[in-house]
Length: 78
Image 1 (spheres, rainbow, N blue to C red):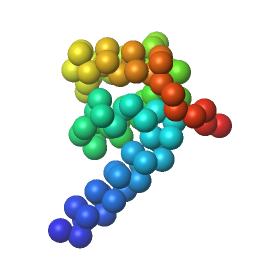
Image 2 (cartoon, rainbow, N blue to C red):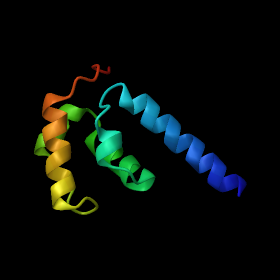
Image 3 (cartoon, helix red, strand yellow):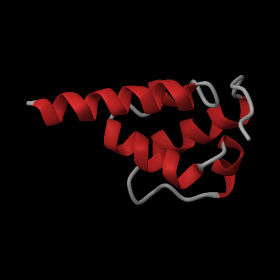
């Protein structure tokens, strides 16, 4: 039970922090584990276009995420 609480807390923090850079991603990828894999692989949202996420994202979700990354209003990170 405590482990689930901790995992949920860290997942919510990751969504909050990365959300400054790519806020649209939270609505596109609802699963915490898939969200973490996506962020780890993508890094900067500008990398989304040339990356492959098909090993863990459905095709429609991947296309939606790439489109959102292209027009995102999130802040730049350094």
